[in-house]
Image (tube, rainbow, N blue to C red; front, side, top):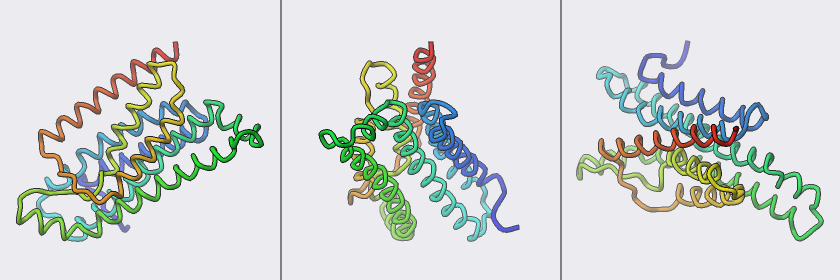
Length: 232
């Protein structure tokens, strides 16, 4: 049977499963799109540790290493590319904006607004795909630079940043009376541009990773509290 099935890839597989479950819940109406946010954050937490877990195995073959890199990017595309879009479209659906735009498409360019939002969603997924493919294509170049300087840089903002950004938008939505559906898509557009912008972003060290995980846990707890408040 092809593939790798040892402990080095378990977290990546679990992250993918989390992302797919989030998509299913968001787009099928099984639950609120907000529940998809929990799966987005869960995928983010799993992704934060998968690389470190994989590197604990010292005797990995080149095939195992390359396989790990490829499936990580493929899983990231689903979890941090497709899932945030699914959550946004689900929020657009339940907010009533989608129904109203379609019903009143002849008035004041409402139908054009719907097209713009859909284009943003498509652009976001495309930008995430380009970002991940470029990351893989330049891995050797970054390794050479890191060996010389001792510092690893990314080009563009990592797609995993969406696991922190979009939950924050949803938290604001929870604790306010504002309908942030359009704002969610605006953030999607900003994130898409950040994925492909030609800037260097330093890879976080142990302290930086700890801070990111802490922020993620705080957001996770706040989402639980907010969702409990929302469903009362």
